[in-house]
Length: 218
Image (tube, rainbow, N blue to C red; front, side, top):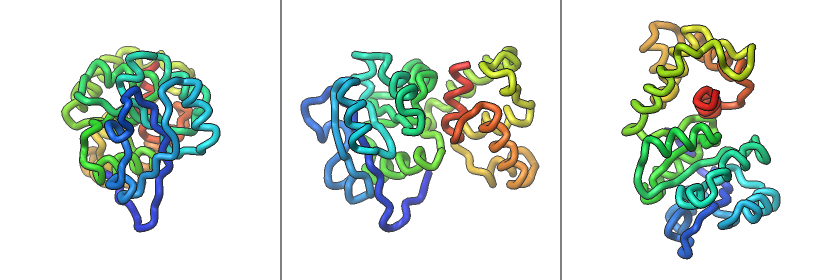
């Protein structure tokens, strides 16, 4: 999980259905951990205005809001492709996770997680790290492996990943960092970074988390 440097601040816009702001994301503990909620909204139109006006680093959506309007994550990805979207939920659900990842969401978190843990996860997403619950990693891996026969039919012709690049991608899903991936695959960290860069270039994405989401949508 990402380490937060002293003085780091993260600007967040929150989309929620709860009448109590503190029920989702916010409060003094999260602010103390470096996360500033700059706006809240309960409709897509208001979210779009808040993003344009608030220049957030990350958008955090309540799973309940996505249930009301399932098009919100994908609409945000289309309108604001450089702003990562995270979903927070009251209870993990593997089908919901896959649906959100396919919609372009880069993180899936429990809303009641400790404020410092949520802050590290949000900073990590901004740094390109996927935020997938350990309990659901196996389901995401199963889905990636299910796609294996269709690997040559990804959305972009230039997105044909090599077997080694798929190996690296599967380890990224598990939240493993460069050095650990290198140990698992018996290659150097430099080679891992080269494979990650190749994956992102072929998929036309800017982060490791976005690469996972892209493949699940293919």
